[in-house]
Image (cartoon, rainbow, N blue to C red):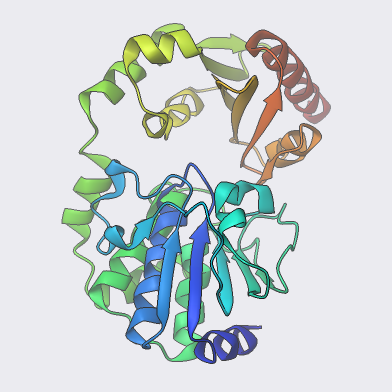
Length: 322
């Protein structure tokens, strides 16, 4: 499959690269790394994300390449989609791609719907950045320090600093090669993990004070209403990683974050510490997806109703395990 992708990209002139809305470092790092490589190949490259590049990711070299999509569709030879399991998660980017482009879908989510004309989906990879690194190695791409930094950030964040299940010798091989290619690990790690804005600290304080435990204390949850988000003056990007503090509690098997959205939906982010508790399977019931140990969904309904329904399913899964 890598040969087909390399042939399609190298044979194209105008290429769009994009990833899912509310991007994380894997989505943006992979997008920027791909864009940097394609530009070095002399391609006319456009990199889009519905949310652009969030301020907290300005440490990624080349972040200025990513912009929000225009209102009028544009023509491309190839549309490269990264780290996006379902087409709708591209948001407004879809409407900016005129008919005629070849869609290439590269991802690591087990719930990927294979919506591309060429699909390379590898759920065994802990990050899309890992897949892209292996693609670059296979295709003989020269990995510059800027490309390496984006790929390392992608892999590091999606593996929880090389901690999560799925992290293996393959992951560390990629990390080692990327460091050899020019990643300044200490500087990058400070930017990723030790430079949070004060408002995010206030959100964390609020979350810990409002945390709840369910199902014999084996599920930990935190809920954020629109009113509380406005009062705390937080940005959507500030929520990233808060859930990991809940998951860290001894005895907790699953952590869930419920965020009220302005469109009458609730964003659910779920994590598991036990392979027997497959939160991707749970999220798929609610039209979401992701990985067995980390998944999410956007569900129509009130915060209380969605929370009650989702908790029931997760608790049932835990009791099946008993």
